[in-house]
Amino acid sequence: MLQNYLVYNMECEKPKVYLETSIPSYLTAWPSRDLIKAANQQITHEWWQLREKFELYISQIVIQEASSGNENAAFRRLDVLKNVSVLDVSEDSQNLAKELLYQNSMPKKAVIDALYIAISVINGIDYLLTWNCTHIANAFMRKKIEHVCINFGYEPTIICTPNELMEVYNEE
Image (cartoon, rainbow, N blue to C red; front, side, top):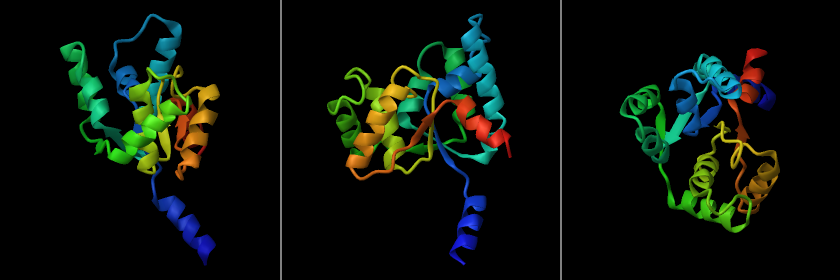
């Protein structure tokens, strides 16, 4: 009976995905001449076609970052985010972000990145989607980040890039 419930539950619930600002940025940017950036933009567009398979979330921080810069570019970024649920930057999120920085799982200058992770973790988000491989989707830091989250009693969010998340859902 429990096994049937788990199968049913897995089929009904969409995985929760927190979109870090690099996702709408890559999605709406003019095509890059840089081959790696152009490939990441294409992958982001392909992943975006699968977005209905997920519950998407952002925070006010993402909205603030997406609003900055060129007015036309900001409009395009905000337009793709208009139907995405917005999570609060709670006190618990702020405290976990501080611990991520204090425990040296991330560089001290990566305050916003630590908040992205903490907001995702505190809200039980399944995946944090990002192209920030310097401070967020970084294999070296990932273990340290997970360690801090677990030590504070939280299930870590899976941090990944769109191509990593897309491969799983393209196989279905």
